[in-house]
Length: 130
Image (tube, rainbow, N blue to C red; front, top):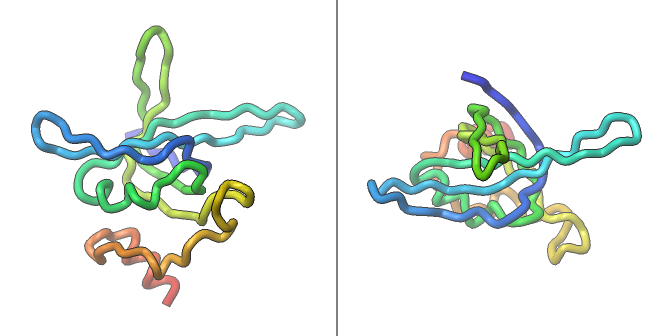
C-alpha cells in the first residue's frame, strides 16, 4: 500500500456515480499547492470514496472547500497523460470556501452536519471535540 495524506481545496463538487454492479462511488478532485522558494505549482489528485460513506459526504464536498484526505495513492493513464489518484480512507472537512466565494471563511459548524454516527472518522472527530 502506498499511503498518502494531502490537504487542499476541492476543484469541483463531488459526484456520486452508480456502477453496473450497483456499487456507488463518489469522486472529487483536490488541488494541492506545492511551493519551492518563489516557484508555485499545483498538484491535482482524483479522489474516490466507495459505498454509502461517500454518498453521505457528497453534499459537504463542494468546490472550493478545504479538506484533508488520506488513502491509497495510485495513478491512471488516459490519452497519454498520467493522473494521480487516491482511494480515500479518511476525509477531514476543514471549513468552508475562502472569503469572496459565496460563503463564510469558517463554513458551517461541524455539529450541524447531519451524518450518521456509523461513519467512523466523523464519530472520532465528535469525540475529540467533546
